Amino acid sequence: MLFVPLPFVVALLLLLLLLAMLRRDDGMATNRPFLVLLALCCVQSVLVGLRWGYDLPVVGRLTLALATIMPSLVVAGVMHLGAAGPRRWSERIGLYGFPPAIIALLIIIWPEAIDIAMILIYLGYASALLWLMRAGPDVLPLASFETAQPTHRAFVFAAATLSFSAGIDALVMFDFEWTQGAHVGKILSIANLLGLFMLGMAAAAASRNSTVRDIVDVAPVPDTAEDAETITRIEALMGEKKLYRDANLNLERLARRAGIPSRRISGAINRRMAKNVSQYVNDYRIAEACRLLVETDRPVTEVMLEAGFQTKSNFNREFRRVTDMTPVAWREKCAYPLG
Image (cartoon, rainbow, N blue to C red; front, side, top):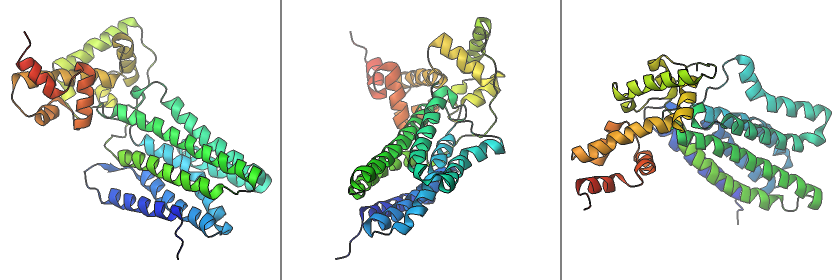
């Protein structure tokens, strides 16, 4: 009976997921790093199946080569969701070239340290993502306010995925030390299943994006007077111009309309309102939705779009955050008040 290693099954599922993403036609820009990452994961699964399913150690070097570029692709993929990524060629070379360069050097001078180096590289990139996201969704000026929170979670999820990969590498390394690799096949099979689940969630959410790639202004931290002036100008844009109705509004666009650096807007709203900018804008959207739900009989979907939201899941989540009830419950309550 033909033996089909589990990694081959995982590779087939990854391939189907990749083909589905390539065939999507939703008018949004393709997130190429994530698609490349998905393709490499498919190849990696095939190599793992050949190595441990059919005992072909010769493919081990190819597996190592692919593993060295995956952390960079993860970081590049999530940056396409709304972060201001590397602008200079030197920064891009560092992002993509650092892991392969380190491993290539170790192959020459210290091969025994390669396993530990790979673990440290994965943990290093995971730590860098978490450090980048430490200030919350406002560090994503290119992501629309509707998607800022999910995008921030995608970054954290990517960091967790890299940490998970580092943990699996550590288990494999220790298994070779203690049992000469007797359990590596089982470890990698379980890791493939868990990794497929994690990658599928991340790639499905991040394979496409609609952000505008512009340069983000950087300004010094403003004082209290500047905070008040900033809030006044932003409130005028929201109240008079109803800028929140723009479904693609992001921090960079808001900064251009207000004529104020994005960091100054973020700092002022954080300090004065005790919330991030996406929550601040979504509060205006929910207020508009509440008004439309009470004053009109328009369907909830139309109300959602009119208020500036694009997806029902985010609209319902933000509506519940602000009102602690669903849109339908809000309409029924306000149409027929108790007492």
